[in-house]
Each structure stands twice: as C-alpha cells, then as structure tokens.
Image (tube, rainbow, N blue to C red):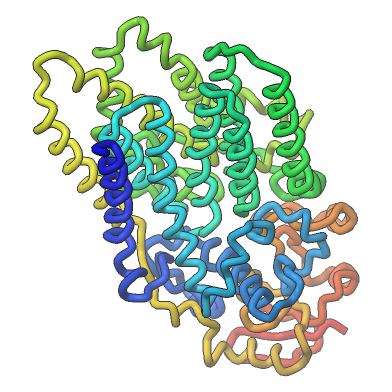
Length: 539
C-alpha cells in the first residue's frame, strides 16, 4: 500500500512540474514557441524574440502541422505538405507526423496551435515519467528515480528542442525503449517485446529520423548488452517472440526510412565538408548555460540550439564523484554506460574518425553527431543517480536533509535554465496574418495555389496563404527530381536546396514555376512592385 502511494506521489510530482513549467499554455492559452516570427519572416525583417535560432520550428514544422491539421479536419487524404513542391510519395518523408497515431487525436482540437501545444506538453511530461520508469526497472529507489526523471525532463535538450513538437517525442519515448529492453532482459516475457515494438513505432513516426536513429541504436545496444549479461534459459517460445519482434521492427523501419535514405544521398548535406565538430566551449553548457557565455555565440553547425546540453551542476558533480565513490565492482557494473559516454564524446568532438564511412555510406552525412547530444545527457544522469545511491547509503549519512536540499537546488537550477530559452506566444500570433503583405495578396489573387520561387521568403510560411513554393529545406524529393536538380548543378545550398538561379529560366519552367519574388531587377515581365519587393512572371 505504501509503495502504491509513493508511486502516485512521484506521478503527482511530474504533473506539478509540468503545470508549473507550462502555466502560460495551460491557463493563459499561449503556445510554447519562443517568439512570434510569422510577420517578420514574411516581410524579411530582422528577427526578434528570445531565441531566434529556433527558426525551423516557426517557419517549417509549425506551418506543416497547420496544413496537416487542416487536411484532417476536412477529412482529406493526409499528405505531408501539398503546398511544397516535392513530388515525393508520403511514405518517404522522414520528418512528418503523418504516420503517428497521435494524428487521430486532431479532431478533438479546434486549432492547430492547440494540438501543437498538446504535443509539446505531452512529450515534456512523458520524458520525465518514462525516465522514472526506466530507473525504477533498474531497482533504484522512488526518490532517486524521481530525481533522475526530473533532471532529464528539465535538461537542456528537452527544453531547447521542445518547440519543434517532433524531436521532443523521440527524447520522450527513448527512456521507455530502455525500460522495455530492461524488463524483457530480466523476465524474457514477450509482452515487453510488444511494448518495445510499439514504442519504437511511436518514436519512428514522431517526425524526426535523425534523433530517432541515435535513440534506436543505443536502445538496441542496451538490449543486447542486458541479454548477454542476464543469462536465462531461452525456450522455443522466446525465440519465436524475439524473431517476430525483429522482423516487425525491421519491416516498419524500412518502410519509413528506405525512401528517405534513397533521396538523402543527393541532398545538400551529402556535399558538406564540415564534419560538425563541437568546440570546447560547449562543455560549459553542461554546467552553466548563458552564464559564462551566450550559447548563441559559440560555433555550431546548422543550428546553435542543438548544442544546448545542460543538465545542471549537481548531476554533473555527482557524475565526477564516481572517481571518489566508485569501487572496482561499480566500474564493472556500469562499464556499458561509461563506454557509450566516452564513444559519444569522441564522436561529437572528433567526428573526423568516422569520415571514411561517409564514402561507403553517403547518407550518414545527414545524421550529424550533435543530434546525439541528448544521449550524453541521459547517460550522465543515469551515472549521477547511481553514484548518489552509493553516497546516501554510506554509514552515518544524513539522508533526510540532503535529499530535500538536493531536490530544491536541482529544481531551482533547472527551472532557471529553462527560462533562458523557453518562451510563449499568443495563439493569434501564429495564425496567418489578416492583412498579409501586398505581394502575398497579389499572388493569392492571380491564380489558385500558384507555384513561386521566392528570394524574399523561401520558407514554408507561404503554405499558410495557399501559395505553393519550390523551397525544400530537407530531403523530401524523389530520386528523379534530385537527379534533375543535381544535373543542373543546383544542389549545393543549405538555406535552399534548390538554389535555382533566376537566370536559369528553362530550369524553373521545368519545375513549373509561375512567379518569381525578388528584391533584384531582372529582365522578366514585372507584374507587381511595392517598395523594394518585386513579383515577376515567368513567361
């Protein structure tokens, strides 16, 4: 009875943290996005907000979700984004919620922003709860498991990436994959393989393959490690369950991932020469984000926020305490996590060691090392919890006072760091502008869903106004389309995969472009002009 009450208390603790952290969303109807950028991006104005480098959450993922939400509400066949010219079959999209069971909850919500908010809050809550369950499966106490779950829930990766509404899901389901692996290794019960398969699909269909691949790799390695170290007699039924689970998971993954990998080899990332090594300054962010230096000033490839790896001073000090408190048996017991931690650190700070693999498997370029930083945080927290268990079980240790002192310090520290990058914006700010820029209104009036190439705003925001764009931020193009672009030498830019020069009129005609939006003067029919923004018609 007492144990059940303690579990309910732990569950209530995660609910309270979630209520506090998302108070503006739950009670003031604000969306957990850091700033309102819709108007700024359409006008090509200077960026504003607490964290302007969360660009893609505003201009790519949220507009895509809006389109998907509208399709579901109108009972239309679900497609990724009908306003972005890519021609790819829906099964090849590696960054979409299309296949997630959660899309069936969309009819409950009246606005896409409400559904987006629901996803962010759900993943935040589940990340802590699932990490708690995993630690409990490893026989840590309720208090230690709650400490680990809360630390993971409020760690840098969960905070920095929650505004995407997709990556947070991978990090939320990852601990449950570890939980299912641990329970199966201990019991050999087929039900935990079913759980592993279901959670694997939830993470896979969540909408971000890069983070998912790293989470899956570590989960599978952990499962193999536990199966080897926990030796149990295996009967025919166990073999059948395990073989069936392997076939189901491989088939599911291949169905979603293979079209993505086929196209990825012709993407802009396959031409990158930067190995995405992190600099030493990023190590500071494990301890003091935005105190010893603004993380936005540190060198990081693509998106600086990806390096936000904060877990707090206390967990990090506990991790380093292993040198003092760990005995030989403890090092042997935790060698799996220690080896994985060392490997991930080397992988992130010296990625050149795997560069030869890029020649054999070019698609690996599209899985940058720094996408795996959340695994480093998770491992550090696991080891911190383990050494804390050793510390508080030593003779003459004053556990009661230390436990509550520790909780106060960690919660205050983590909530403080969360406020550094987290922001909320009113729902109405994310709706399409009632009075959009004049050039947008003109494009709406000249044709139904016109296809444009824009130098002003080559972003998915045009989808909010029923305008199709040839912008393609990520690899969602079929082989034939990629080959066409590659033959014309256009697949070299990160900002815009197409990088189509306006002077290549024949190339743009082949793509079906009708209008070009630019601030430059071109020898093309000018059909609209306002201040320095011009709209040209492609004859």
